[in-house]
Length: 358
Image (tube, rainbow, N blue to C red; front, side, top):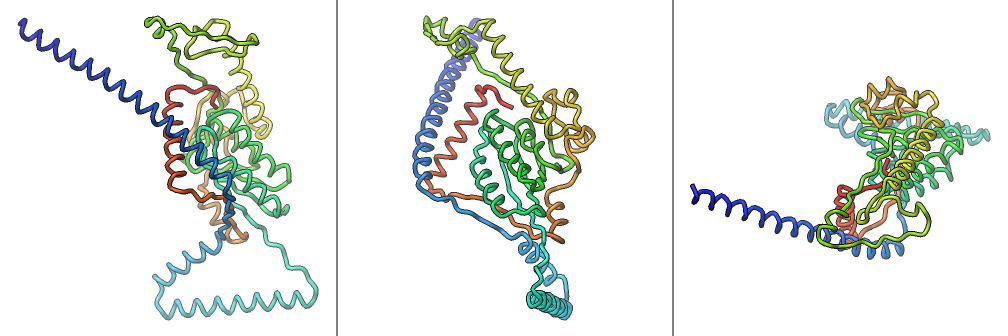
């Protein structure tokens, strides 16, 4: 029995030593990723500032026609396909002749509505907002009142002021009296819904997640742990509420109360924003921080129709010219590595601590 206890004790001791070693290794890895991610990101940002954004415009009608032509060529006989192509050429010639006749008569070409498609994939800091604002500025420079903008949003939310700016960019479209539709195929929650609610119309896939109108803040406090190792933290501020809660110092009931007050104020602003753009909502019932799938979101007026963005675009292609607009920046391998490490570090950090997120 004593021999077994000794072996058991050695085993437990080995596990504890291994656990301490693993903890040190994980801590070092996290610090390394954060540090290297920051260094590479700074280098990438300096390089990016020197590069010019590349505007990319894709004609969606042409892409759909190419798909349609490819499948028709595959499923039709050679004779059927040849006859179909011949008929379409006749139709093109007829339309061209009508355009020439209108030109000779001095008649204006009938305007055809255009649908401009913009994609937004959100992370914690809504880092795509720069591409979003450039795309919207470009579209607004040419859009007319018969045109429409479709924004495809995919975001679980993030930092308050970042998503506030993203929502303000969408509001620019409405301010110019251009119809704005938002499509949610996967998720538009919290900050994502703060953006989506700006639209004149929201469509969502049946299993898309929407809502989460609330505010969350969380951070660890290491003060007791540091105290056990006789480590004192000097935490000084000028201004009564310059710092409410801290990770290293000792937090107070007064600081916690002030921090909670600030969260409530943000929540009030959030609810006011949603109510302003979607007055049909019962804000007290849906601003609980809950999120709902498509059918339940429709029942609560969070969305206007259950439909995927693909079906919406396909329906519009019959009567509209559709263009996808985006801004891209060519990245070197170092920049791609830096962005990857920075995003990884960001995810690790925000899994440990995040403040004032929506």
